[in-house]
Length: 356
Image 1 (cartoon, rainbow, N blue to C red):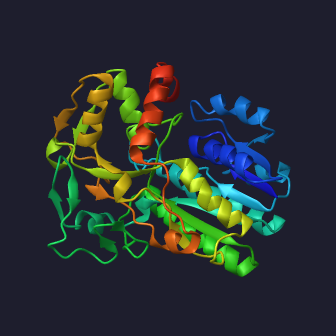
Image 2: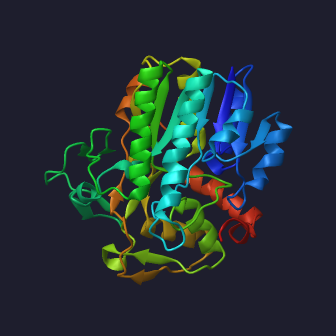
Image 3: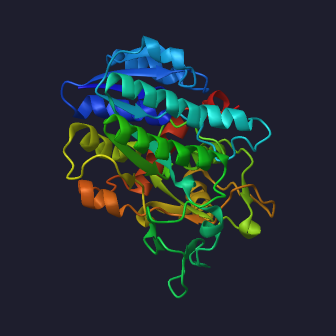
């Protein structure tokens, strides 16, 4: 089997590549990356030693696909993953659309021409911000939790948000480009008869991630805490009660392997949550307490400032993946945090290298 991975030298792309090479027999992996992201060069030598074929290119440029070999599957891990893209004062709306939508169009045209299947990695940020803010919550143990005594929007329970949750606007420019990419991918697959899988992920986390305050928050928080960088609790009373769930990319790769090898029970064409769920969720306050125990006290400052698109509780339930693939996360959040902490200890230069 031949596989092309876009954004192969990013955290997710490189992690999936390593898992594919170690678990799938006779797989050949090629990758395309523009190497713009600080830190991406750190993965190139390791993957080259593993036999990966590299192409320097940008998914936004259609002609860069002309150099790529034919493959059986494309795994799309190329994106600007910040929910603040186009609204952060550093990037533009055009950059958001070019990275996360026009790039998808070029990938789909490649799949159409080469008769390749597609695994599209999407995001929890396709969901409606007003509906996320309407989820009934209460405080417990330094964290927001779902309040089962009150009615919530359709598609949410104490287990988390399911694929039925509203995707009505506003969802952020980032979310809109990813939601549009999903729709285009399904239409291309149906119209031109190639298989498409869409995996919506929450926060992916693990050692070696190029985390920032806008994405990759678990990795960023540990590195910044250990280096005594300023940390802030934004919004929601400045108490750090907001919650996300984390997933190790090795657990995501287990689903992808089933999808590209045809070992699942469901035909391609659906949208699946592949996420950590409540068992792998944690508030920023709880994460800070964990860091205090691991690295020594370093308090986060409270601020009432509200950033665009912040939401108090995004925990993803994965019922479709459980049914289709018999899947659930195997790597628990404490193990993920221990892995990141070991990387923090071994790489004190990491933030300076990977965060502008």
